Image (cartoon, rainbow over all chains, first blue to last red; front, side, top):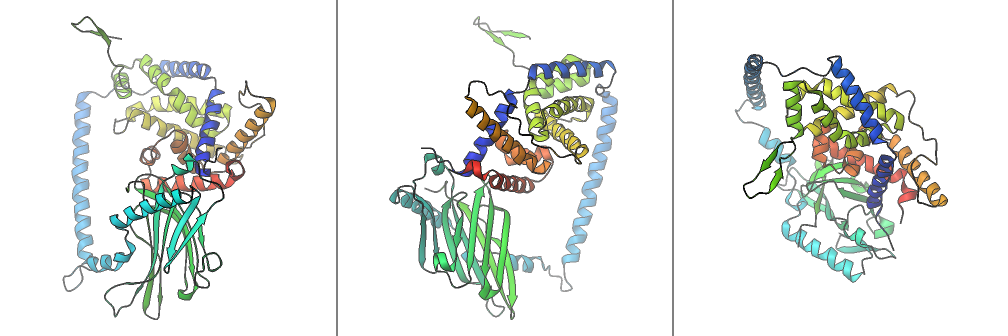
Length: 273
Length: 197
């Protein structure tokens, strides 16, 4: 039985196509053709010039150095002017305030201990469900699972396990800290499509979440996600890459002076024991 | 090729000069055989890359030849900041993009040729299925923009890391990640019938 995931099959499909295409090429004939063209171009004196003389190189290097120093100086002046412009009349920079405002709240981070637990959880649950587990989600104190009818193959198990957390936080100007008002945690292997709604998962009426992630390398993960949260007039459709383990603010709305912000965090679990 | 003779009596062949050494030697000497060696070394990968971007076999050969001529004409602009192979891939992609722009008004078409590839050794039914599959893959790739196509070809087929592909394309790593993601998403959707378990 061979039940590779579509992503694995896509790579195999592309490589197979490329190999057959390459096999159909007559590389020897092409090589002869190219070598003949190179010889002809060379005979016309069209193929580049010999290395410039050392004297010219030195002059070139001196000119490059002068240009480099000029560029560094200009960059320093621009940076100094930029800093000066950012400092307000009281002599305080507003940069820290802006950064502080954008800092993700503590609740949006997934710490190492949590990731370790999630990594163990998905492995254990896959074993319990005989490798038919698609995803696990937890929200509002409820744990939801999707289990497929057929067990996954080795190829599916080689897909990277991921943990994702989406947190809606409330920032009230009268309160010093952001307060999480809704959270969903998801654990699944890459490229599983997770859909949560009132009908399928008993979420509050109108709330609908869709999530898909694919790790493009050790540090970045491509994510397609959307959330509709009508009660707070929050809705977003995210399709981009984000850094593993770092919360990303994906949506922000303000209602009656209170700000609501959505943070999305995705982390790899294949490094966790 | 020079040989190094060890006192133990064993004979070791000296390592081949690197691409960068060959390029530098050509710049000093103007010896055409050095360029020919570079062409021989890189022809399989360059022709494969160009063929996967251009998608038309006959045009791909012209673009491959043009790639090497362009590269060798501009060899003095190769400063050794990156590996020669990376620089040559960049020239190949730029040459392919120029070709695609010229052909923009007449997009690549899939004619459904069932005997496009050498499929000897398989049954007639197998050949037909394989040819149909290859045609669909080619059609799906042709629907991607050249930049998205290059992103998926460099990473999925040529096995380059996103950072290496970004260096070749001269874009940021984030941009390359995005192109890979987008291309994969479009191909997964387009080839869904051939990818389902």
